Image 1 (cartoon, rainbow, N blue to C red):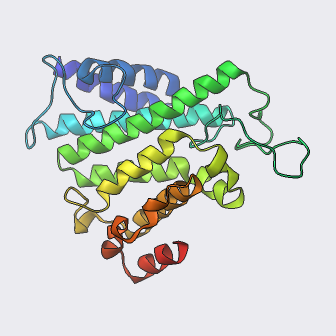
Image 2: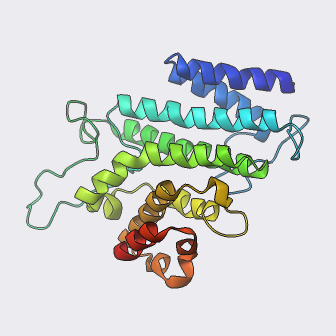
Length: 262
């Protein structure tokens, strides 16, 4: 059974490389359902093997765990490709009702699409918005599953891969929110903030990345994204001193950048 699971992982990865995201997602879902059940848990621990199909514990069967993690990342990348095809942006709650700016007298509200030539949020149906929101939830869960599994097997380079994927898949949203702060206060997907909050445990604490794997620029980006998102919805505790222990691990430039934002 394990050999079949590993083959499915490889098929999903190759399907994504071949430009077949929908097929890759289907294979990933079947594989993950066989190992941990379906759907993936929204909170840790997510890697709780069921039945006879399990890998580990560390340090055995590391290769199998890595393939599971990579296929989870592949699912997230595939979902992102599908969203981009629709002109939609990761991190945005497509079902959120956006209030028109004060003084606009009910005029047009900017939507959070990537490409102005593609359908805007106002042009897609309620069912399509619901489907897109569900996909974004699955994207977040897949990334967090891969990172959690990689940490469980002490494969820190694979954790870094997951953090990098997170940043790359949400960078458009972060950049857009700098220009349009209402994206965070009115249109932010709840799982986006929850994921950022969970990822802080990879940056500082007992089970954080070792110094050898600590990527300064990536960590600063993730910390700033978390602070911006938290403050936007009134969670000011995120900027309190005892919550910013990650500052101890940042270099001088990184500390300065975070402190200036706070």
